[in-house]
Amino acid sequence: MSEENNNEFDDFDFVDHYGATVEVNHEDQLPDNTAVSALNCAFVGVGGGGGKMAKAFLDIGFSKTLLINTTEKDQPDNVDPKHMVLIPNADGVAKDVSFGKTVLKNNGAVVEDALRTKLGKVDWLFVMAGGGGGTGSACASLHDVFERYLASVQAEGRVIYMISWPTAQELLNPTIARNALSLINDVNKHTHVVLDNERQLELLRGKVGMLNMFPVANKTYAKLFNQILKLAAENSPVQTFDSKDLERTFKQDGRIFIGSTVIVDPKDPTLGAQILQNCLQRSPCAPPKGKPKTGTLLLVVTEEMASDPEVSKHLDAAMSYVGGRTDTLFTGVYVRSKLPGLIAILSMSGLENED
Image (cartoon, rainbow, N blue to C red; front, side, top):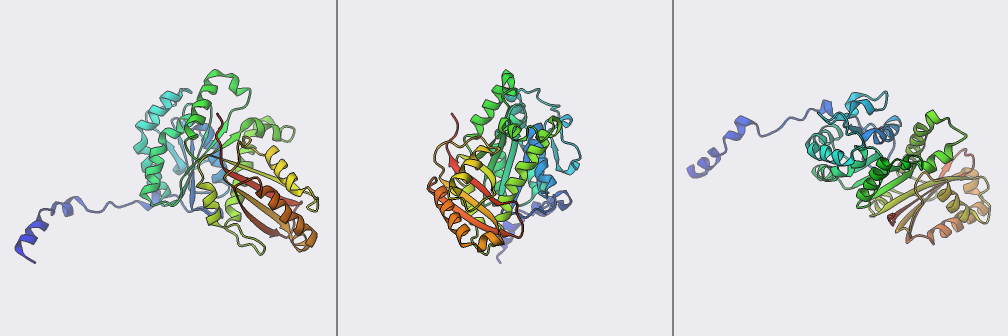
């Protein structure tokens, strides 16, 4: 090597002195998810309501879950502090969504650092928030932060928002109504799920007391969504819905709808109509609008059902019926030893946004 080249290297000898490599403290990184999932994913709850929604996923084994808030006074109970990200010097935003957006934007570096150090490498980021509060309703102001984080870890997925729409009674409060409208307008620009709190409470009234309605609603939705992630990771002896199918459904722009039902008699000739109607009526999600670009119908049956030619005929007819109402339908049929009936889980993606 020439003396001239040596001198060129000498121009950068300061790098050794200041350190060319930043040591990462892996003790800060959250453990891997124990919940079975076809996607390498994490859940982020923003604000009080979003934190409670995210905690439901943390409780079922999604260890890569963070709760971001502007105050420590509105955090769910029994959450390890390592899952918390407290925005400094905020002490809440008093339901002021404009102030909430300013606070979150000004602290984007705090959030981005927490995502990198605590979550490590994930492909999909599910961001949860309640419409009504000032912090959660401002969650989409962090979208650039979420995107930069995913790009930095070379993620193959995207950011998907899961937000809750206030009840009819809550919407009588003008501040809550304005905040919810601000949130829905922001997430309409991205892939998202809208959980309708009014519908969720209607499904639980008479079954659960007022004190536990929202915790049960959050837990029920988490278990429903988890079943989609779980089944997509499972090989079926009949028909498999795999991770690539799931990724394609989640990469559609627009709104996502998810519903489920139990059908006692799978030999009913109207099985397809029953599945579709029940899933639409008994879903925690806001009703779908427009024709979905992709749909997913996952059927879970007993060994007896799977061995019955007549049931198989009706299952095929049901999948054709539902498939005729979407541009592309992905299907999966899974077998269990004991069930209360035929379990059907329906999702639709690429739906139109509400005006």
